[in-house]
Image 1 (cartoon, rainbow, N blue to C red):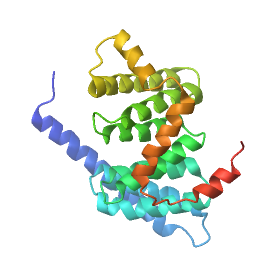
Image 2 (image 1 turned 180 degrees about the vertical axis):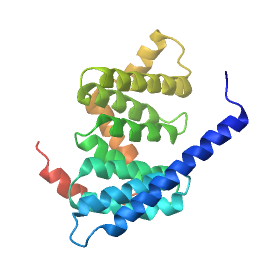
Image 3 (image 1 turned 60 degrees about the horizontal axis):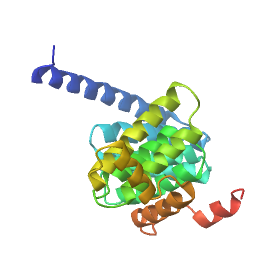
Length: 228
C-alpha cells in the first residue's frame, strides 16, 4: 500500500529529527576534542556535521564546515576524504559549488579511491551538463570505466557498473535520441567513448571549465609526485 501524504510527512519529520539529534551529538564531540587531537579526527566530525546540514537543506551552514574539512584532508593528502567533502559541498548549492565539483572530480579520477565516490561526483557532472553537450557523455563513460577497473569483483562492481551503464544510456538518449543498441554502438564510436586515452583528456577540459582556475589544491605538485 502506498504512503499517504501524511505518512510521507511523518517519515520526513522523523528523519529530520534523527539528523538533528546526530548533529547535536557531533557538535558535542567536536567541543570536547582537546587541542592536541588529531586534525583528521576533527575533519571527520566537521564533514559529518556538514553532511547532516546538507541533507537538512541548510547549505549555507554546511559549506564552511565542509570547506574546513576539505582543507584539513588536503593538507594530510587524504584524497578520498577530500573528494567526499567536495561531493557534499557541491550539493550545498552555494556560489562555489561547481568549483567544488571540479576539484572533487579531478581528485576522484586522479587517485585510486572508493569508486562510489568517483562515480557519484561524475554523475553530478552529468546532471549539470546541457543535454546536447558532450561533457555528460564523457563523464558517464569515465564513470563506467572507473567502475570497471577500480571496483572489487562482486556485488559492488555489479551495482556500480549497472548504475554507470544506465547513466550512459540515459545520456545517449538525451544527447542524440539513441533508441536501440545499433545506434548506441555507433554513438559510442562516434564520440570515441570506447577509448579511455581520448575521453579522459576531454574530461580534463570539462573539469577545468567547472573549476574556473579556482583550484583548492596544487595540481602541478600533485601531478609531479605521481608515478608515470
